[in-house]
Image 1 (cartoon, one colour):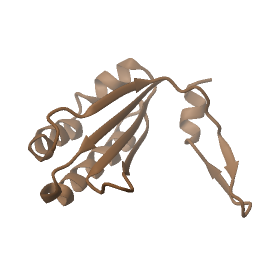
Image 2 (tube, rainbow, N blue to C red):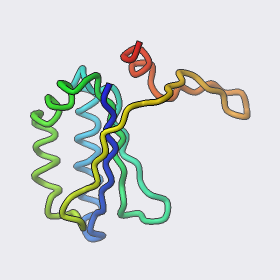
Image 3 (cartoon, rainbow, N blue to C red):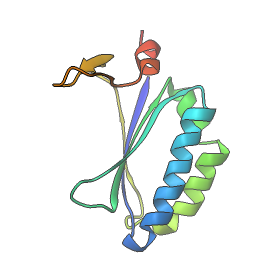
Image 4 (cartoon, one colour):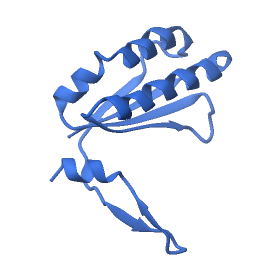
Length: 122
């Protein structure tokens, strides 16, 4: 399993366009790629123009395949001029612990991360 953690700083005037294209890439990554197990777009609480992508791929080949997809190419081409930093921060990490289910204080069951991820690391 390969986990990609990306930090992106967007120019404020391109916030809306960026979010729209990022959503398109994330949704199609999970929907169209069997090797993409999770793709979250997370917004920083203190800086609304800073985003984090949390992407989980079955293996290195799935990550390489992701970068060849039409939706990634659209994302990459459109967003480059909207970035405040020339190069986003990219970290490849390895999951140290994955829990399949948890309960909130109120007793509601939640899954984090998705069951697809838990199955992939078995």
